[in-house]
Image (cartoon, rainbow, N blue to C red):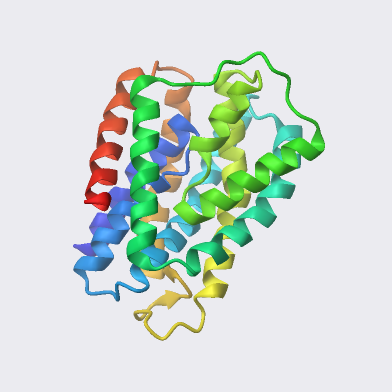
Length: 260
């Protein structure tokens, strides 16, 4: 039954990854926290495990989402390249930061972030475009900030990258596509860092690789890789306003439950 939950979770996260340019971590992390808690994992490590496992699954989610967006010529590869320089450094620092935060406190931080993102999505708040993209250094700094925050929250960075790129005059479809591409280095660097910082932790359950729980990784990855392409196709065909608001409602409920 536990593995079926991970399969369903992967399907939902995959669709969200392709549709919104997010890695699905905003859904994966809360579900894994509740799942790990129900299975009696230590409160001292279960939140870090949910974040680390989420980042590892996003590696697989991102690949198919990127391929579909690239096939449509929507990825701004030069922007991706320079943001990745900062992302790699920021993700490693973010994983180190998260490992130093107590589990309950980290849950409150993630809950607050989920509520804020839900409000932004529900109200359709987007920065006004018109500004030009920054230079290489500016893109690197932006990537570092996105990578650091994404590693703490266990997300692919889309909720940060998409608004930044649209603010800088990139079209919505290209912003979603480029954000999907940026999710891959975020996930790789973050997952490796969470494996490293959790490697010698004595409170980890069996079948863990550092702060990555392998059964959850396998279950989510199996379905998310397929459904990410479906989400990416929908992003180019459907106006996602209603779905965004439903997703926002779900995020708000999850974030509120974390805070309460």
